[in-house]
Image (cartoon, rainbow, N blue to C red; front, side, top):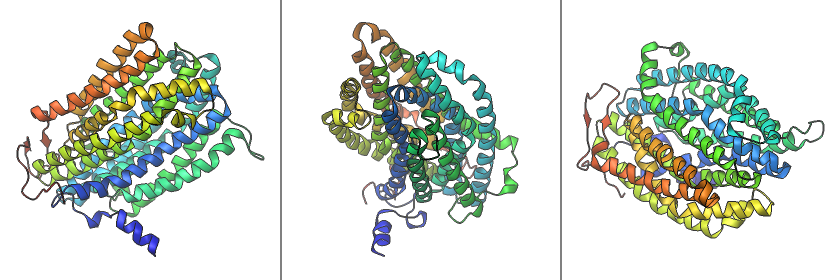
Length: 480
């Protein structure tokens, strides 16, 4: 009983807080805290792969470094659809139209399933060609291909679970996805070493085993999530009769989702282009780069979670006709994330060597990876600012703005800078490109918001208004 009481004091259900009235800080915290844990658990899939493959061989670790951006590239469509579905569910929920929210959820799931099956089947035959474009060594390329072919076949489960998490978040329930994710991560962590290293009658599968473990765990998560939404007892409801694809709804979904997909694709392309540059260096540098990006994915989890919380809270307030309260949410989140991630940056700078050493015992990889962290760690807080404002842009339906900021940060600043300085400066120039682009991304997002680039777009048809926030809402207190 005491454990349940303690959990209840930390996590609040959708019915225990209101996103559209009263204070902002507490509901944003209760909405975002389970998202932090969910995202941490989701990253645990990759971290478990990285850890066990690091024990397996350096080539296997390098292979997962190449596979990660390819995975990100494949799921960019899922990211776009999940954002679109989440925003539509959030705005309809804020407007009090549960029937339209359920219809939006049902359509999003069906379109995502169809899209993922098509994308998986189309990508499978071209894995070899894509790996060769990245410039991986022959020994590593074979391992990357093994991983990606399994992942492509299981893409529908990855997409499906993304939709479950996002749609539940749009409604305001972030606890249920967290619990489902926790169970499947335990499963993944348990079977990862068995499939990678071999155990008893199970053969040693290496990189292919890591892919099988990940896909199988995501499949279980998707089945459970789908059953929860069909039952409709946890907030979002999907109706099988509403899952017949509606061309008009698909247009709306893709209108909102395509810019978000472009944003995700742009990130994936930039990561792949960075890998092309990194691949000109030694395998130790490639492995260190892979570890560094994994560490960043963990450090930025609070920012990503709070950004998703801002997206939901913004969407519900826009749907409720309260754009000024939505703007206040953005400002509060930007300040909180700058402070919080700056603290994490200081810790990462001080403890860079032991952090990298968690993933490998190779002295050269540890040295290179630690230097990578120390170059980037002082700019962690600026990433928080960018995530806060881009989450708000997406919540209003302005996914094009969020995509533009990402493309400017990565495609115009980070990758070109790294390419220009890689030869004269070596790896320090590449690490510096991360730091410079982080600061630039925050500046662009902040100035865009401050100068009126933020617009609230009501997608529900309830209020028929768009606006620029310029004054605080009467009932929106930042501090509770």
